[in-house]
Length: 531
Image (tube, rainbow, N blue to C red; front, side):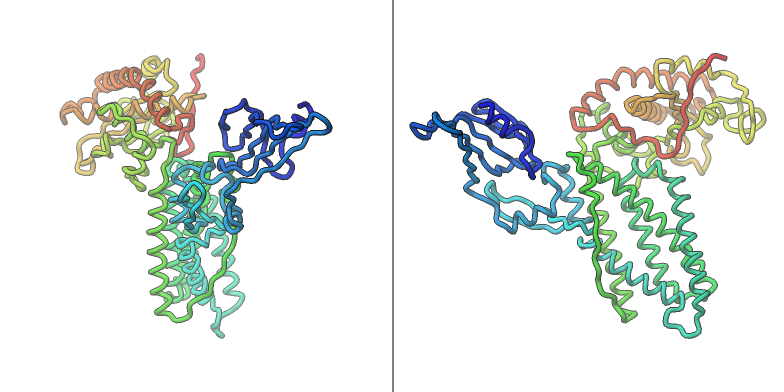
């Protein structure tokens, strides 16, 4: 038996699959686990002492290894292949699949890839019945959506070269080179600026940015195709602007796709899901056919991307998903799963997703999350957010009257955040609550993802509480700091009573509360120090 354990211990050479020992009758608990069991006697002089069953990561039986211990001489190990083996062409297709598919990816991976990236759909009958197989060839351009985008991109590239003077005997090569250099430089600077301004918000709103990236790219393609129709001076500006859009699309597209790949990966196979390749197609030459094809392909490109993004079921709670999950729990006691929320989620929410909604209803207000404490002091200062001594402009001091900073910090001493609300005066431009009610959240140093989520839940309860006030009471709360403090304290008490229970129920429903995707800009953290 010692020789057998040495023979079967560790990894099977060249396979990457591990072996383990289980009692008789026990099934493997993971796709890569191996089953060992006692076997009946095979002959008088040779008996089976154990068997090893090897499975791949998808849970399919690869082979059985049966050791027969001889009473005289060395033991023997027989390799028994499964009776029903996959056909060679099916094994070939597995080269193009994520390792362990479909167990290695989330259940929404298939729908997303069908519409967007690197996929072809194949149906075949396996030993267990009908199995949906996704053949991912590593080239994003091989899906219908990306194929349409590729041809549209090539059409726009031809228009750019025409605009630069290719085929025009009067065009200057030096001038064309300078235009292209400036155009590329514009794109490089735009990449840096866009990443700085919006990089933080892409993970929080990855579905919206994934679709927005394609919209920006398609608009840039249309501008490229229109560029030859403009005079030379205007054409230069049009080409530079399209380069800017391409750069923004590249930043948003790559970052959002990386975030979605991290969502799909379940077995640390992120690199495999990000594999890419190349594909080449021919160009159209007739101008009418070119424009007809371009518009058709762009429409198809955007539609399929929209369908693909709609199919994604994110497990992290961003601002919009947190609104849905918490309001359903509070008002109905209903726990919404990622699947339920994905069906109701808007790809493009108002104000970039920073609004409060109750059960997907009207907007109750908006939230400035992770702001500097200066914004909080401006709201607490006499005169609101400006004027003499009000903290507006470049004021270096703030006059706090009814509610001072120490009072507010004491109220949130046990929390990892500080929250306040500003209600603007009723004016024609403030006809909706999204502009009138503004919640400010300041985060403390070392704030945990769950505390960040609690801060949003607190803000949602406060916005709902203020939304139920009469107009005169709401206006009074906007002027009377003590009245607003009472609303903040009441909603904080309610959040403290409900949050831990709700967080536990959401975790059991499949939500990942240990990753925070609520901040959409580079925020600040505060630390209380002794004066």
